[in-house]
Length: 202
Length: 202
DNA sequence: CATTTCTCGAACAGGAATGTACAGGTTACT
DNA sequence: AGTAACCTGTACATTCCTGTTCGAGAAATG
Image (cartoon, rainbow over all chains, first blue to last red; front, top):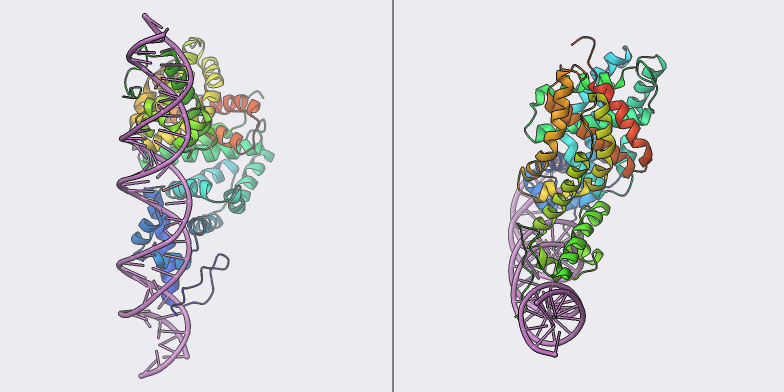
């Protein structure tokens, strides 16, 4: 009986054959890069890009949704690591600039994946996965408000949404060829810092 | 011979039967509202929502793409009218506030349609259709820069992208139930004006 | 009222994508 | 080396969508 490798939806670290783990990683990576190029790419395309048969892919992930979720988790983990490596204890504007600079390119790489996840995962699941990394950013913004470095007349949620929106916008501009990738960072910083700055009259 | 009503891709105003014109309008309206609820809605769903047979729909629009384009044009026309009714000769910040206030809700209604158009119309077609309305906004921003009311250290394209991104972000927040629609206007104004304001040190 | 125009549903062809089944071939582990 | 785990291609069932055809029926127009 040709037993298929169990499609583990839960724990990713089971001690399986080296071969299997390698392929799984390749599939996840391929999911990210392939969806990046074409948000509507089929499972077949993803498998091919991973250098793996389609059936093999289904051996690792029971469904397309499970695959997308795994890829999203992977990206978020990396994002979380990147955030951990950052020193966010500086003055809020400085910290924000640093955060934007290190976050935005990651977001630019995974924005298609995110869109795919939005429509293929159950309602709210994406946000749920995000909230670990979201919490860190929120903490920074709140601190900035408390210290008077960021404006206080707008809700924190809105300020976070603003950051999100601007990063996505920058990614859109790049994807459309209207903005060179290396210019995005400074533009984002300049715009966000101005938008976050305390206002003369509330 | 049961002649189908010509699927006019070009001129929408040919003097046809009252019935046909009414149905065409209903289909366009239904396209907008149905895609708003579900960006991946099928032609069948759109026809049903319009109270029309699927075949009838294909009598008016030869393909899905043509349908989406017609709907987009309809929305853009309305947007253009709304802009025409506006007095944009005031001081730039004031004019910008007015513009945002009247634009953003229209954008909120049609953002799904826009996404659908982005991936179903030929490359650049969406932007091409947009550029009439885009020109007016751009003119305002440029004037603001000239008069020293808006910051000059960032490119116009980026400032426009910023406006786009923030409006979309607001729409996202509303769609997710995290923001009440009536609060979006003021938040957008406050954020955009701050982002556009001339900076102390360039 | 007669005719042209439009609409209707059902049905068909074509394509594409998702999952599943099978059966033999490879590769990693011990 | 031998065994189990894993991979492979092909093939199949299913579902969904698009676009078209047909014939008959309803509605607007003059």
